Length: 341
Image (cartoon, rainbow, N blue to C red; front, side, top):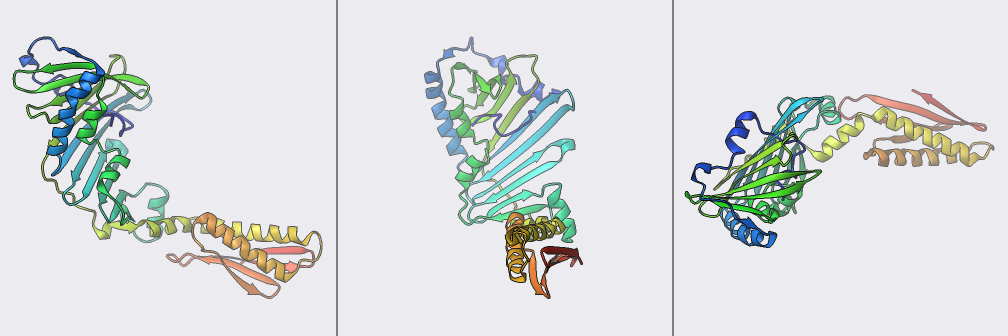
């Protein structure tokens, strides 16, 4: 995968740029770097991918730094820490966006995925539900496989990165046994100079990306470490089931859902009457159909319809706040009379 495929913004502070965006071991450079074709680079990086995969078999961690200078917002920084524990089938990814917040993802094979609660409707629903302390949403997935999830979540796997950058470029071998592979890669709309840093054991230890055009802003660097990792999943007290939260979000709009059900049922009843006397039986049938339709659109069958004299009572009760929204819909000659109660 690309060094820039996961983030939407790129980061490198001046200190990071000074320390990481200069090829390590430059003082030990062993002469001019040879030029490699794409085929030669692929062959040269194959053992790097293999060695990196072997090194990461027991676990690996990637810390990715990004920076982007946006004229309308100023410098945007982002640090993305990815931890993979293949032994226990666990994964975590924590994205620190500085003043823009923090996003976390946790996955466990055979269990499911935890993600940070989204600010907006989800946080509003949790307040309404009386659970403002909840920070994570859990979606159960008994069939979750870690390897497939890493691909879907764009995790920066070191072996994948070594294979991805099999492009024409240069190879610099230093006297300390480390090697730098540098290529010009098309990262979205702009070309980037990407350097892969490899240790003496052919294991990928880092990747740097800088715009090929020095006038462009946006830099990235990734540092890899290998070995056993520990991923701690969020506590149950700080977690809500995704289905429960979805229900809570739907109930935020309860009044509108009930109104839509009533409006549709009344309109369909008038249409079915074709200017003739409205029958109570038709009104009741179409009011229930309207309730079902509104429930499907909301994702929750919250609207209840009860027969009353001359028509129906259409209502819903919020299970957390106990607030009720209700209307009566009655047949009156050729008219359908709707009243809030």
